Image (cartoon, rainbow, N blue to C red; front, top):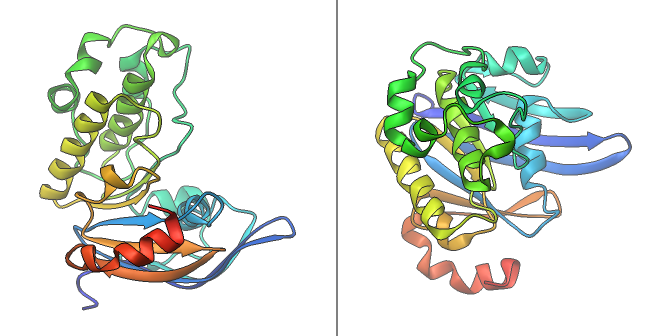
Length: 235
């Protein structure tokens, strides 16, 4: 089992100032899996992603990333373990063109995608490569945010609400991209409110409430968990 684990989080507590947000989170993600964190707003899902990267005020516990203990590492060292983060706010540089945004991220590991491969996945970005970030639609900005971390060579992708507020046609493009990345062997953790988007993509699910993991189950168990999901998520 240990050889297949990419990420193991044990008894993770996270704080913003005096606010205690995560209360002993335990989860594992295996190499090549897509794992989705489910929960209502405020459940601690985004904080879990940020805690993995060290982007919280304080954290305790254990975060093993590909066999390396990361709990005491600074964020730039954690990123160099091969992690890419796509935040909910996207973080597009408005004054740079689409292509300049793509060329900006540093390499965190070898094997990042070239521009030609990126443009084959996201032809919209090729068409808009000379457009400033401010001129891109919300969907194009989201595709650009995902594409940037693919350029970096990251093997563990943390995706925060990438389908939020997007047109169905863009959501379909992102779903195809996630399937393609899984086929390439990348490991993905998604935070998603859009259950219809997340359900067909994930291999496993964790349900969070009040900063804790309250349920974990596989895609094969999804149908049997409908009642529980309705109780926790209202779906």
